[in-house]
Image: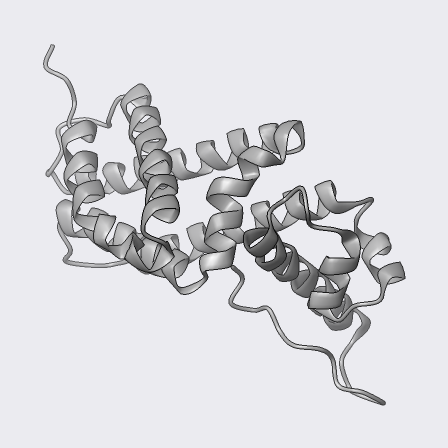
Length: 215
């Protein structure tokens, strides 16, 4: 899910630094594991599948990761971090945009990114559950990162006088659980291409849930 993922490095001599080379290899491995897991499932994915898709030597894989579990966890973290950074840069920096539109645009961007990369979307929302204990801490950390983003958007609404108070964190947790469930259902039933159609539902639900409860 990284927009910086690149193809194989050029053969022969090149002017890339060692840091650029290793960065490219790392990103390609992370992209590859999401694609392969999304296509064949977590259990069936092997290190050979990952390095073959990434066009990286097996020994290079083991300079970064101890095995498939660690590679998938790293890819999961990287993909979500990139998505949240894109949202923060695009949405929180907007001027003259009301709270409802800021929420809507957030979901439209995020769901469009998922729809454009169906294998990665399935890996992130379906196969992370199949990965079992290896992803428990990562899922919790990612859940909190998304909650922090929603709270940051709501805080802008408070700053601009559109919300009277920051939302209840438990309501945000409930919202994120529902979002995850609906994305997984859509992937199972209709496919990734249909994900953008969830944006209006997510927007309505988010706006309703982040309103502070009366005293």
